[in-house]
Length: 197
Image 1: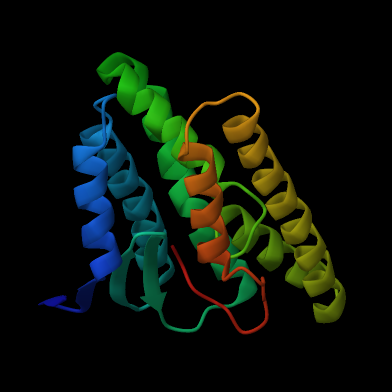
Image 2: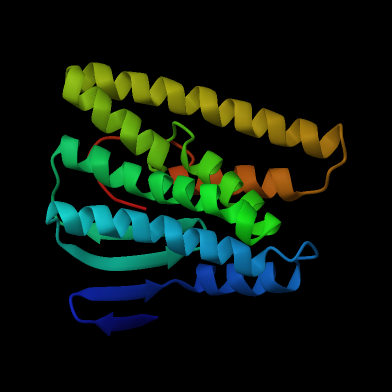
């Protein structure tokens, strides 16, 4: 589904619609609105940094595995700043959230930690990759990113399996690990993937 606004196209995937419906009906903790408020602030942080840098933003895509801002080409320095915009906005919300709502604080904290994982294309992985590309030869930087991604994915999948099978906390850890694997594309590639979200 596509909607257009002046200069920015909104693309809503069917997987996102399914995710929203499932989240709404399977949310006994009442985190539906706090979660989407935290996501909106996070994406607004990316958007504001991109606009401040003068980077053209063409589309916002919403999928079950996350949001992606489609932009014009960026240097690694600009990509580093743009990637940091979302976590910075989440951090600012985190500082204000305890005064607003405890559920907002918790969901924003989890969103911030999730996005700081050193896995491309999450913000932490994008910041790491852009920073390494500025400091090291491309091959070395990509190698480090691949190793850190593999280690992080292994820890996340192992931790999810342990939480679900050994501690019996339900399927949420496995679903989150599966979401991470889908976001990464299961077999992580960093080359020529310059996207925001």
